[in-house]
Image 1 (cartoon, each protein chain N blue to C red):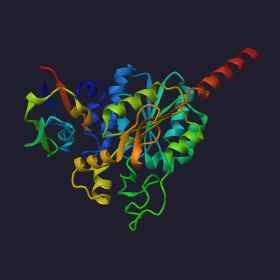
Image 2: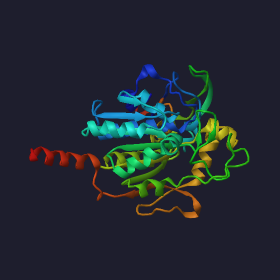
Image 3: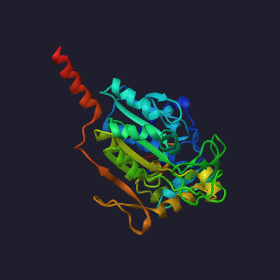
Length: 271
Length: 67
């Protein structure tokens, strides 16, 4: 076990529930390096997650953790932040949990611009339940619930989340761990709703059943061929690839908890 | 460089073998506690300490350190 993980992992909970080659483990690995770098103490952070493979991530860490209902991680995180404005709140969620079942919570959390960091691990499928179509599944993809190809178009989460009012949006991939570290670090430093979409390959459900890759390495090679790291200021990747990097950041919009604190102060002075 | 692979938690996904551009690691014949074939440092002299294997390990079981 690497020295950073040694400090933060709950050893009695190991091994990870993730299948061999799952991208979620790489995200946990990266997250641990970032909190170690930022020096966030074990009592200064609350982790929230919903249901799904990705939502198991905070359970293995030595931080306070809320493992909540399917899709309701963001609602719980907003509540946690509202009563503990001095704590860092991080949400681990999957694409089905966040954009599918918790879709309304997502747009409202973004609209309120609460100071929480959301790490959405997108594997384009409902992995834990056997490979059903998720709201992020690409058009035409064959899944267990769309055997003739997905007839729906996926969500454009960048436009959805930033349009709803989020002030930070980054896209990273488990195939590029250095860029992933940077996306998470900047997201945690940012004050406001920070949304990090991580492309996390699922070699078991998506890889074996949909793409018919034999090994995780093959799947990671394919992912690497589909993404391009963006230069600063660029928002569109060339050749129709998926751009990785910080796509949007806005420091102008007021953050909910700080506005509420000001209002409380005003109300107190009036009495 | 010293590359340690935790035989307790390794799941043999071989992403470390893929991540290493210097061809240091290879899947060997030894099995981890879970019964997966584990990688080993076949060519440790070629390691430049970039730690990409450590970063790419989904089970946080690789540790690269200076000897």
